[in-house]
Image 1 (cartoon, rainbow, N blue to C red):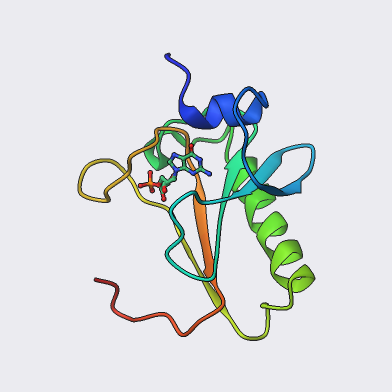
Image 2: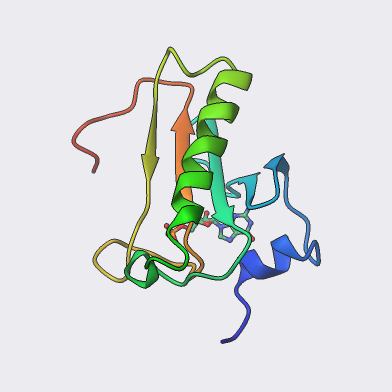
Length: 114
Ligand code: 5GP
């Protein structure tokens, strides 16, 4: 598989504003933020889409949620609330094929989304 832009960020070959890192997960600011806080949480292994999750890699989802809970508390947005989103394939408007959870916070978000 060709490396994605997120593989390059993981390998620190291109810069990103990294706000969270642990053994399994990296979190960095989205380059085109849709809210005052817009961070992408990615697994440190390449999983192309949500469809590629299975028993062998599903724990990464647990690690991503744990990372988000930690980060939301750390920046003081846990009680205010936030949204987490994962887009899949064409109809979901996924553009980078290394799964990532969008974490959006810092303002009242619209629902339903546009
Ligand atoms: P998707 O559309 O796949 O759900 O989301 C991909 C996200 O990655 C988009 O919100 C886009 O702004 C962000 N993105 C794309 N390229 C880069 C990059 O090079 N650096 C960062 N920090 N974010 C990126």
